[in-house]
Image 1 (cartoon, rainbow, N blue to C red):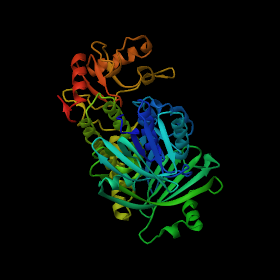
Image 2 (cartoon, rainbow, N blue to C red):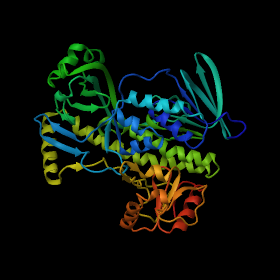
Image 3 (cartoon, rainbow, N blue to C red):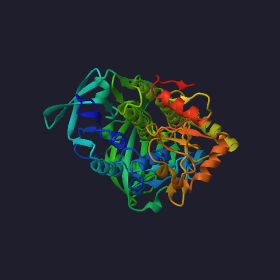
Image 4 (cartoon, rainbow, N blue to C red):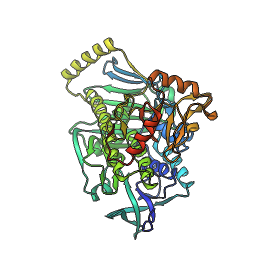
Length: 497
């Protein structure tokens, strides 16, 4: 931190993405000012799903077990037509996940935010200001001055970087001159959240009912909740669809009277949008501030948390003097294609669900049933594309993949490898300032060494270098990997030769 700065990083927005960003930064010894305009947590459900990779990130900041205790593992996701025929099925509980956690986890967002806020309160390097509204900022050289109000009292703080995690209507994005590009999907839905009284009367699995008369979603959630979503018709307005009689009529076909208690109703427009730029000078955006997607793939919150996992270790390397600021170019080049792939998947699912023409629905049903008969069902986690362009070794075919987490009798390998980058397989020529852990023969890894060695043999490499976000930089000769990685930290973001 320079003498002219009060904090290394100011994070605006203390939803799950901003809270995780602050914790990932604090883990590296970075000083953080966390600003949140609301004093208390929004008490009603919003996001409903996180996958195995997000649980792994929660593990890295010490909250995974607490998050898991309020979540429910999802083992199946089905798309049904109005007759009950299965059009698509994802057996998410049938195969092991790469990250050592269940592939699909249904959540109660307020419960997760309580856990994250409690963890933030334990971190001395995070100065949290709830009830504080970000107003604007200006950048001068290497310093960003952030202006904010607390109970009408204006104040300011200087930092090296500003990170906007302040949602779809991001003020940080607007004040930076960044904008969202519409990707051409927009549908209005009514969301009905309930508390569960008798779970035996509810569907066992997550469902999309592809009914042309009224496309419908039914999902089990964490902390004893259940959610229904109903697509709205053009002539229906927010007030009429939120009326108790209308809501009761929608739920009548599910025969859940007495099995659930209404918690809230809300109307949402499901959209697909991506920011044209994710960075302006020393100001960056993440989560809903950078991209919006329909909920059908359950990847909205996941994508935001992946953003800050990708970004925060790079900020840490820059602030510690181990990397050039040019490394930040790789944030968008790595994350945007991944986000767009998740949006494409969600839009594809949404277009399957949202067909309202009966003839087109019949054609859709016939095509999907035939496809399922020929191809079978998908199992395990939704496949995530590997990163393509950024701080990656070009000649390695595993560069950009997520390195697996191995488990043994309740232990997880990430906890033993530790934070930072890893050289897996060999321990020669290690610069302790660049690589945090290495080798498969060190005593603390005795349980996992055979598993890691077998994985290396299967991939055909003697060594691999793994970035702090658990993405594989590349594989091959250990000394060459170390040199290429260290050089890449100071070069403009590109595929490293």
